[in-house]
Length: 93
Image (cartoon, rainbow, N blue to C red; front, top):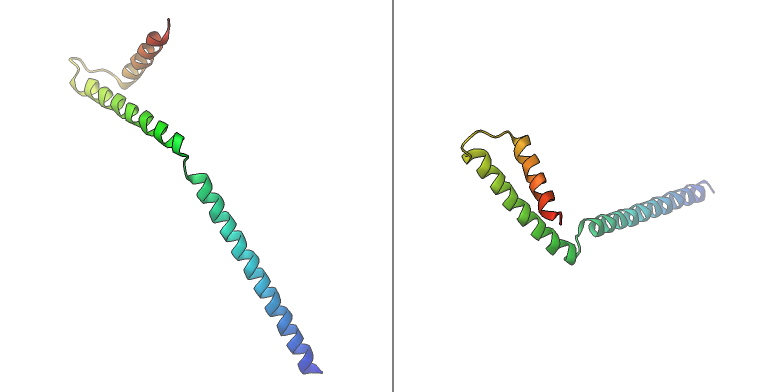
């Protein structure tokens, strides 16, 4: 009788351990799938972003060139403000 109770208790514990392990495994797989979907960019966003970063790199190059090679020393704040002013005035009709 005692042996049967112990065997039943061990089986229940093993069943719970397996169920807990299976649930944990499914949660890990779902979490990894969610993270993968969130981190992968769509194709249209990717090409648009690449062009934007290329243009920003060009801006960075022009910024560095003006900072280092301009006749007088220019503060970064002035360079950035001038770039923004130029962008806005170019966009205005």
